[in-house]
Image (tube, rainbow, N blue to C red):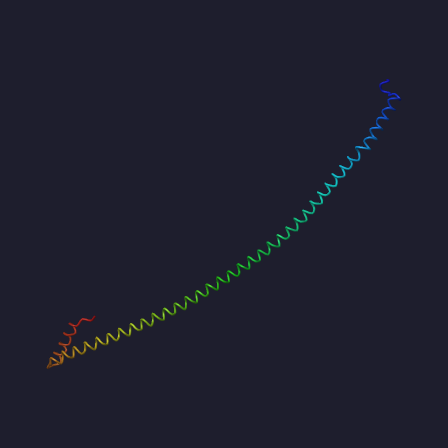
Length: 164
């Protein structure tokens, strides 16, 4: 059972060695280890703070983007409305212009038709007058005794006349 019970010398030397290792570690190793742990903790906290700041900036940018998008939509709607009004104005102006032009053309055509009609009537009157004069001349050249003979002569001359 001696293996299970350590000796007093062994406990002394073990305690002394442990104390010495503990002293050396506390003097040389514990401070750098604790400092590196503190630095690591600080860098993690800084990274978390930076991430929170970035998240806040992203939220602000999203808000700004939404405002810009809304403003762009409003500007687009205003431009579309203005373009629609311009289109309607152009169409209205074109319709008025086309109506005025159509009225002018119809009036010009009516004047032309009336002029052609008057010219045709004048020509017809002239031809009727010439034919009447020719017929009267022929009738006067040949003096007829009775009325029936004169009418037959006039009808015969009328058949021989061709109208242009």
